[in-house]
Image (tube, rainbow, N blue to C red; front, side, top):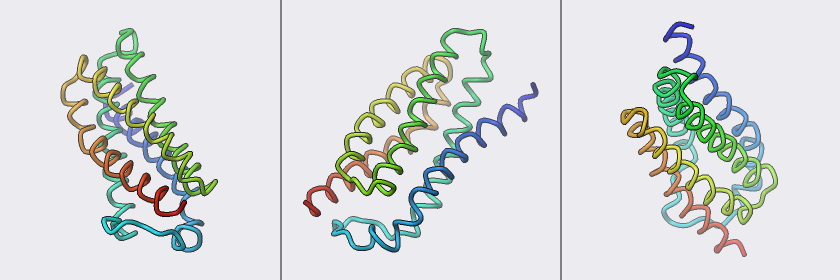
Length: 157
């Protein structure tokens, strides 16, 4: 398989995960989410789509850099499995927070998600430092999202 196809598939897989998450998210934004008490540091709704799109593209490039080292390498397979887990946890967060309208369960998920992103970065770094560095904005955004999520839990008890 050519490098360009691998790159495209890696990015596409991440964007599809984002699309699935947005399908759970979009119906709740003008209704349930709009009714929640939010902290002062809550960004405007329009910021989330471009940020997440950028992050999903960067995640795809990072996954490609690791995948390109060869699936015959056990470290690559393990690293991509951990990456897949964090991608699933990412989608699950949207389903829990927006789909089930459960900020508390979503907060529990985001803590596990954060740990899985860190694990992904550590494993990716062993194969490609650039792949790990591409995930820095992602873990920073998820750190911010964790604080936002917790604030929403507290403000809406």
